[in-house]
Image (cartoon, rainbow, N blue to C red; front, side, top):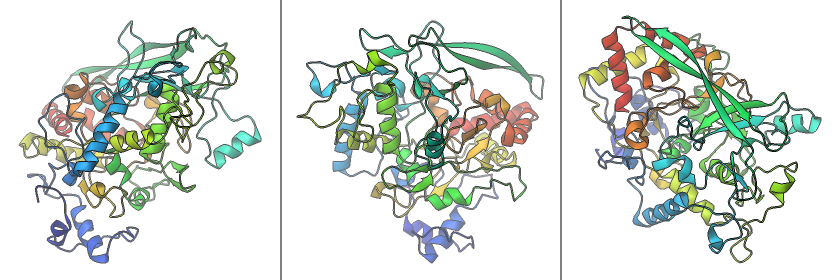
Length: 499
């Protein structure tokens, strides 16, 4: 059983009645056994079965070091491992401006935020705000304006767009540009300090960032422009999140809080451009994309300015108002394909991104970790950070099928309070809502990324600060953490560090 969660493991479990009728991929016998293993524990004095294997048979057991987020899913075939490595090469590739002698690598920009995928997701980990005096690379601003026309309102209602781009600067603020063209401007960040006194007398000073787009090179922005900072998230386990049955996501939604627990999560329903279906969003800080390929294609276009079959415009986020930008040469090569990154480039990068392995948990049997886990449950944290799922038997990749995984997310939108609000709608998400981010791997952030910056814009400088920023639906849990005795609070953090 150490190799992962299997059908034999399920059949060994006692029967437990739980309504999983939405799991059309399972037999009735499977539903009974899955319901049993997904039941919340009653005994926190010991680890649960298979808890150390965060991603089931896909879990990486490699030595913990800075490369811990860069290993392939452990149960890939030999051929799939080769595909993964080729995708890794493209993920790391530095794109260059056109025209270039390296014709398979040109087409950068003309406006961009990074020259490679890894430029934002260094070591496949999470980004961070820029240090004083540095340019922002792994943090950028989303831009949008309220809809003004019937066509814009109809496109939003049909979910053809998630937001209306700012007319001049587009949907994303790009601070870099190819030689001879100015970037769109500069990102300014100032801070307001907010002291929080904890039980026991400790005072934690939170830093609330205030963002502005300054030194604009293409004229003024619309006065009602809404901006939202986003830091690059870690990349592990994405294919397994995609393999969670959509019914398991929708079953946890309670937008009217009918059960009265104060938690009213709801999905961000988005259009899947590949199928034309409306499905729950899973990726992005507000769950605005349905799968890894759509997320990757959006990043190629918005972050690097590279066209793909999914986003064929070679000018990326350059708007028609930016005439000098759209006059630049492109990297399209007829002999290589119709876009700057034609298939199989997108297929390879998608496969790589779907198959970055989740590292095994550490110290799952440590008494203090177990005490922290119990507090995580009793404080209500697990109400949004759902610990575990059994993935669909119908997942596209056999390596992701029918795995017991421990991502600690419900993939739903929650009101996180005024403190974290960006006041910018994005699809179904309003200006106070954010998707519950997965917590697996969060304890290895410093090891992999060399920092401890958390939340959607990296404002939290520690796990404790990240908790203290919670509000809205999470206010009661946050206040519970503030009121804990110092040693209990330390145990909670130790549990998070074990993930």
